[in-house]
Structure formats: C-alpha cells, structure tokens
Image (cartoon, rainbow, N blue to C red):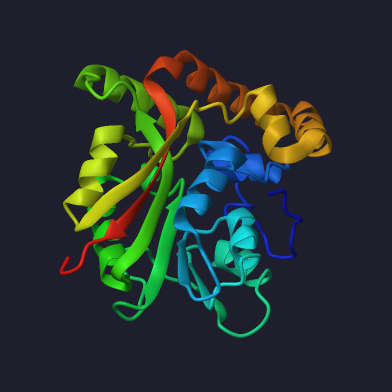
Length: 272
C-alpha cells in the first residue's frame, strides 16, 4: 500500500507544520498509509467488499490513493473517486489510466453522480472528521448512489466501550482535535452501525483494530522497513513537525483505552 508521490501538491501544502491538518502533515513527512486500522484493516474491508470485474466502484475522499491502487488492481468495470479538495483530486487523477476511470472534484454530500449507479461505495478516515449532521448527509448520499444490494464500507475511528460516558467522549475528542488540528468526532461501534441501519443498510461484516497509527510496529507493517525509516528520519529533521507528531502520538496513547479503529461492510437493502 506504499505509494509514490505524484507531481500534484498535497492538500494544505502551503501551511506551516503547526497549522497543517495532521493527516496531511504525516503525508508530507512520507507516511502513505493514513487509515486508522492501517493496511491490515483496509485489506479486511476490501476482502469483505469482494470487488470484481463487474463492479462499478465509488470511493469517497481517496486521499493519497493508497487504497485506490488496490481497487484498480481488481479491475472493476468502472472507478470514480470523489474528493472536494482539488489537490487531492489531482493526485488521485494522476493514478488513473484507461476508460471508465475518473475522479470528480465534489463533496461526498453532493457527488453529482446519478442515482443507483454504483455496486460498491466506500470511504476511509473521512466521516470521523465530519460533524454528526454531515455524517448523516454523506450516508444519505451513499444510499442514493448505490444500487439496491450494493455494498458500502467504512474504515473509521470508534470510541470504546459502547457505554462510554459523554464527559469522557468529549474529553477524548478534544484531545485528538487539539493535536490533529481537524475536527474529530468518532462514534461508538454501536453508533456507526446505527448510522447505517437508519439509512437502509444492513451491516454484514465488522472489523476492529487498536488505534496504533504512529506506533513502531504499525509503521513498519504499513510502510515497510525502508518507508518507516524514511518517515522517522523526516520527523527527526523537522523540529516543528516532530512536536506535532509526538503530540498526536501522545494523545492517541493517553486515550488508547477509549479509541479503536473500526471497519464495516454493509449492504443496501431493497426498497431503502
């Protein structure tokens, strides 16, 4: 899942290290796998989606295109990426070659795609960074774009346990938001399931993993030994970035008991 850089700039590239959204700062430092559960959870989700040559696929917020490459390797009938950031859309566009491959610069709440056009629609590490009202709108749009029986997958951050109290939930969210510099609003596992159920989906597969995005073992598993070494060297060379990375890792470690990576696959019910 390691990806080469393209000529297109990273989103937020003009911002300083103390202001750049955390996921794009990590990308600037050389991290290519930016998903909460890493390479392993993405692979489990893709296995659950079982994408094949007959499938029309839509990906929400492809980011650096790491998962996009894996999907294209499965040779779907069509692939459409949807990203509201023009720089991110440009980077994914650089990966696409051949017919029925496109990326559209649009919001996941209003993709501009026709109804019932996709067999598979998925997104990773996107809804966690949206307020609850936008989560609802994105899932509503996903239900509109997917055909009945279509598969929908998410790869997000979830609170733990399901009965976490409101005060602790708010404290954890504040700690993450303060270090990542992006609004972070996870749901519990039950909350993510309920979000999809209320919009006409039936959850068929669930996957969990620790939120170890910046831990050494996960770095090596996701980036490979050489990629992990490059990332660490880049962090060491940039003092401002290093402070941010250590703060993000510290927030994840301090709240590890109440955070997890969560992936799910769901099917759009007929008549939904």
